[in-house]
Length: 341
Image (tube, rainbow, N blue to C red; front, side, top):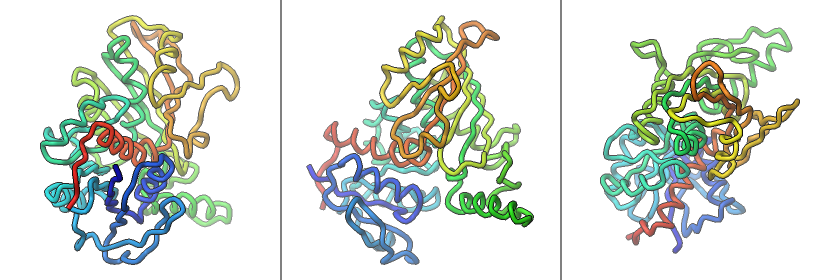
């Protein structure tokens, strides 16, 4: 069937990436409605070899759409996702607003595809945080193989995760330093060029940031509430691509060779793990790719049944836009899409 898609936030980084991925993966689109705020009405965005003009979110009739992809932030999702869902469109929301709602499934298709059936309660499905998405793709097959007890993860998150203004700040600070201009933080709390910042999102009472809490809570909801996870989330001076150093403790023994074989067979993963110079994947190399890459798989000798690994993915793709489109594909393949008005 041809699927009518409404895309809320079509002018943003993630919205434009969603349009690109819908075209690249040959999703059977009937009509795409590019929705934006009134300031962006008439603005043109690309969809494959076509050009779409943005229309007003506030006057759009969501009954025309089978699926509504939301890439516009929590405040927009809070107001408009329930309206779109009530009109009959199945909402796939990229914001954090609905993720921990017990009546809204939080879905990563490689990790918990069957959870998609839960959309019927509210007609809404949540996309996880970008750093969580790639992590659970790597953890799921290992959890199935040896049962994960505990995870310690340190992230190296690119500036695109904080939006276009953050990417511009990295570019301008980097350029300015070479001509002796003092870097002025705006999007970030401290200089980002030639620096790393151990602070993403707001601080919570226990000393963790909300980004770190998200990784813990979302991993439990997607994979297993028994998994114990602690995270340190760090912003680094790259434009696209998140990396994670992950230590995992299992209930059952698993060797590094066994882990590599399990990961090689898992959906959405590519293992690039040569114990030599350059035998691993870095953020620059993952940009534009659909896969989540795993490298540096090794035994952690400090705990019983421990492994350490390195995980890299394009955060605008698997961390946001690709995951949303994969959810749409799941809905289509499982016959969940009805007729529009």
